[in-house]
Image 1: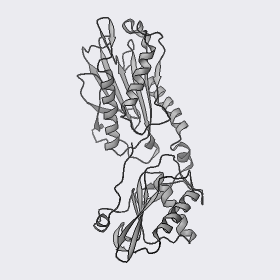
Image 2: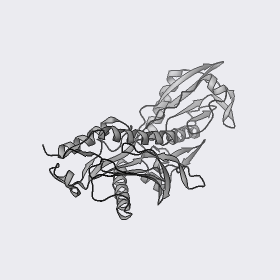
Image 3: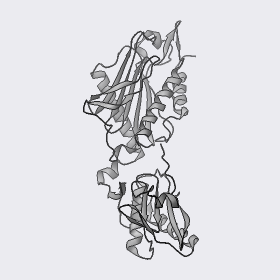
Image 4: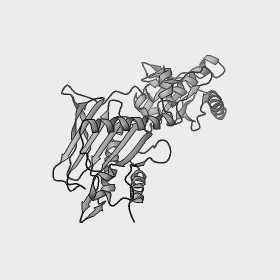
Length: 360
């Protein structure tokens, strides 16, 4: 999920509303003829590209990360813009394509805002030095070799997603958490930012996480997360639910690295000798939207690797007859990752995949 960072204004800078940190950086001068200055600029841009949207503001003297005084720039603005673009495109791999410069007038000249929208072809590298950097607070930090390898690679993301799903499915089975005689739907999600230095979900002294787990079935309410291996889980048993085998249960796992695995027993209903998908898409969409809200509220960004899966179709006679075959049905949205976790196209794609397996 993409976070936009407000562009700087003169008032926001001078008032202290904008300070140096994860999304803003101040520079007094920009001597592009000096190699040290040039490499420093490339390092800053690389660090921000590997972190998120940001603005580098040139022409500001800071003290303690806050505005102290102006250091006006003068000269041809277009020429400066072209020079900055040329240096960055020639010195960063992969080439960033969305960087642009804004110029704000101040007494005696102007300041330059190097605007860095969110870029997603990470990791970015300073080709002058070979460095991979990330922004932590108001400082740049080198990425370790293991982080570079694990950071953002789409193929690794998909491999990790499959391994994560298998791990949690095994824990559900071995822990006898879910009923095993009914169809089981699962949703596995790995956020792009899970390798960053994000704090784990906040846990008070009680050991209960300070978030509530969304549930799937009608009549279910949000459940409190309780500690479990590698994270926390919320479990719902809906007594007397009209599921495909007369019962329903949801397990919502939230990992310490912000991974999510959701297991749902009897995700669709059985009425009058027929399977009905009444509210199936609506409930699954709500589950994804509420998960996206949890991520957004806690600063966990996309894109996300996501897999939806329906299995154990043949374990229930009430369900098995309706399907032409009983193997697992899996769906991953096109592409390695998705930007918008709550896009209705994900639910539609999974639903269409299930319907295509059913007898005509």
